[in-house]
Image (cartoon, rainbow, N blue to C red; front, side, top):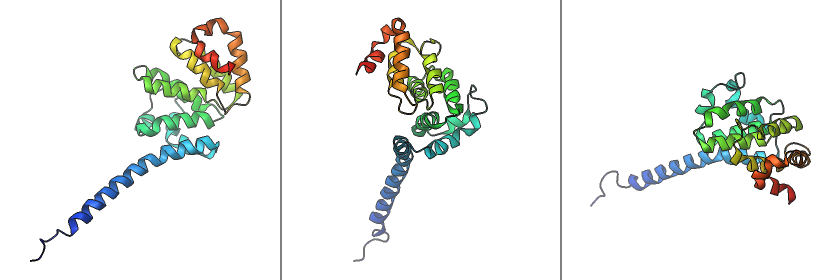
Length: 187
C-alpha cells in the first residue's frame, strides 16, 4: 500500500519551519551581539553604524523622536548607548539627555539612558555628565551612587577615574548618601 500523498513532505516541512524559526532568532540576536562585541573592542566604526537609525533625531534632540521608537526594543538601548559612547561631537550625548523626560514612566529605559550618558567619550562630555549628577531633575537621589560608579568605570574618556575622584572629593557631603558610588573609587 502506498503512503498517503504528501506524507513524506511533512517531516521536511516541519524541519524547514524549525530552521526558519531558529534562523530568525539568530538574526535577531546578531545585531546586539555584534554591537556589544564591537563596542568592547573599541571600534569607532560601530558608532557610525549604531547612530544611523538615530540620525533623524539629532537635529531636535529634546523632542520625542519616532525614529528611536521605531528601533526594535532589543536594539534601542544598544544603539543609544553605543552612539553616546563613540560620538565625540556630543550630538548623541545631547540626544540621550533630551530623551530622559520621556523615560519617566519606564525605569529600564531611564536607566539605559543614564548608562549611555555615563559612557561619555571625551573629558568635556564626562565633565558635563558629572554636572548632571547633582541635578535632581536629571539624576534622582537613588541613582547618584550608581551614576558616580559608572562614570568612574568609564573606559572611553581619558583619565575618567581621576576626574571622577576629584569630583567626588569636592562633592563628598552631597554624595554621602550615594556611598555605593564613592566605594568604587576606593577599590
